Image (tube, rainbow, N blue to C red; front, side, top):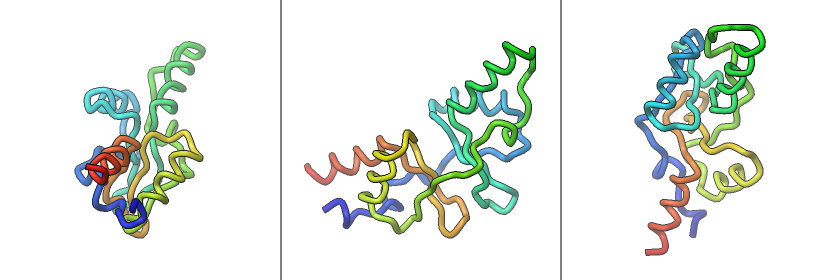
Length: 132
């Protein structure tokens, strides 16, 4: 039954996204404020170009402890090779990615244009809704 459920129906469409030239400390503040484990990075055309995760942000703390740095830009820390889901993928595709990779959330794209984000919790909510 999960194969009949589509990513686009359970993703969060109103999502936080960063630009590559955003100050990374501002991005960390936004992640904490929104209680997110990460957010996509997009260019000026809305194309997905990276992802900034909590793990990526931990490198900032490590670098500053060694080099007395004060951050930098999102593009200095983001992951560039990003796995994403197409909006019309089914939730089984999403579950397989979540099980085989350590990601807590994945960007959702239409082609290469970012349109949302799907988290593990969103998938669990869909499962719960299905079984009610």
